[in-house]
Length: 179
Image (cartoon, rainbow, N blue to C red; front, side, top):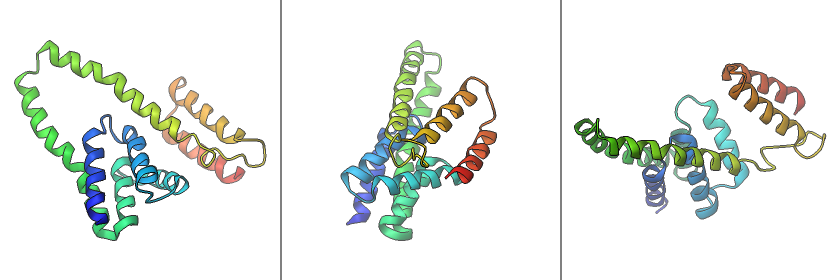
């Protein structure tokens, strides 16, 4: 029965998860942690960390790990395919439709209107991940080091345009020595 729930949950997330993997995080967390209780929020945070370090899209990596956690290799396969299947089906029809109407101003307006929705989903995922488990204190006060690293990384990426790979490496080294 868990296999059917896995297929249902990840198919539904695949349908409503516009904006890519990071936009799907809040949907996945709501289903996996809150609705089905397949894992707690700390374990989910660990899954996200592993999913970000593993090559491939974060949503697919997360689905695979959750599926494996719930139903082994078959569960991982079902969750991964269920997450990807709606996108494959929709893209087939969307591409056919868009190629027929690629110059239509209404289509361009709809695509432009989706941009703030996607940004909101990504922001929602970021806000959901701002928990005590993700911002530990290292004995220096409630979340100081983690918050400072988070803000510094944002500023360095967004304003200073520093390569994210350099920032990931630096944050990892700081985390290794501080925590």
